[in-house]
Image (cartoon, rainbow, N blue to C red):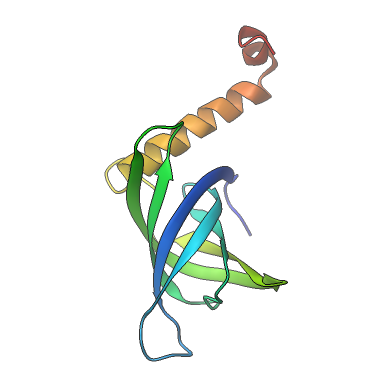
Length: 129
């Protein structure tokens, strides 16, 4: 069960993992759909495998700025296939933090603040909404 609200993010990543079904480490490009401080949801054309321990080098641009990279580690806790696409959830080994993932953490905090402002009627009035 998800512990925290996930926020949409437009990001890609190279995912590296050791699938129990094969002896060599695997590496594939994926798209990240959403993120929280404790996990993320992703899309892949390649199965990753539930229970696989992964490292993700995440690339994203915040509001048209320079592309940034941060790395997270975790475990695939669920995976399902829909057509040619696999959807998976990754639980992070450590929460996102300013010291561990400075760019991704700052971006997530900005998204969280904006989301709270949009949910707060007084904030919406201040923003003209």
